[in-house]
Amino acid sequence: MNKSVILMSGGLDSLVALGFAQKRTDYNVELAITFDYGQKSVEEEIIASKKICEYYNIEHKVIKLDWLKNITKTALVSGENIPEKDFETSKSAQMVWVPNRNALFLNIAAAFCDSFGYNYILYGANKEEGVNFPDNTEEFRMQVSKLFETSTLAKPKVVAPLINYTKSDIVKIAVEESMPLELVRSCYHSGKKHCGKCESCYHLKKALSENNCDYYINILFGENEN
Image (cartoon, rainbow, N blue to C red; front, side, top):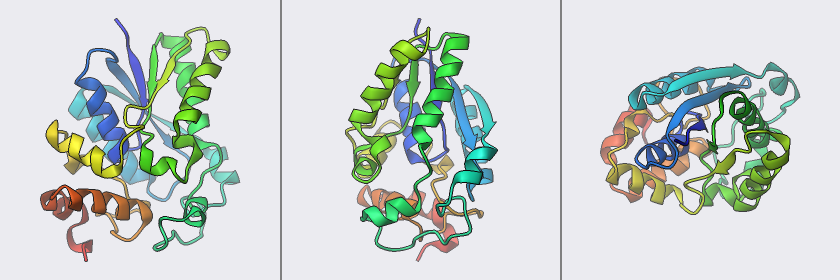
């Protein structure tokens, strides 16, 4: 039987990628890995990821990457202000870019595959983020998957179940398949509720609104909703 590991941030994409995979027989996700690279929302991401893993009854590991924080100058980690406008531009994407993040995460997951025999590595790349983030594209997924054919013994395949979907499509899948959207944590900031102002909140709230998910907007944004 195949078995898989998934990159888990606790956000919309990783939740739905996991839920999507667990409702199918091909993947059998057994392990989720969350990375602590000094991001401002790390505590909230870990809590959300743990709850999601408990919901789907899979093992959850947190891996610290302190050195990545030290070389990351972008707003997710540094003292720079997280952008709150012009979200559809490459400039905004650059402000929240973490150096080689997905390639690094996937390579660490590949080491787990070699050690424990996982056949697949799943991550939440999607069509919408692929516009400004090259590590969310099909080209990137294919190249990394090919790399693992020679850099590992297990030869795991990299799978991005949401690669052809927009955020609105992803929320629709979550609703149709009764996934626990109330557990999602997508905000770039720390705090009890989503801030409603950062880029990640903007895309999440927009996708929820397009699917008439006022119930989840109230849960996730609460008093911060404007």
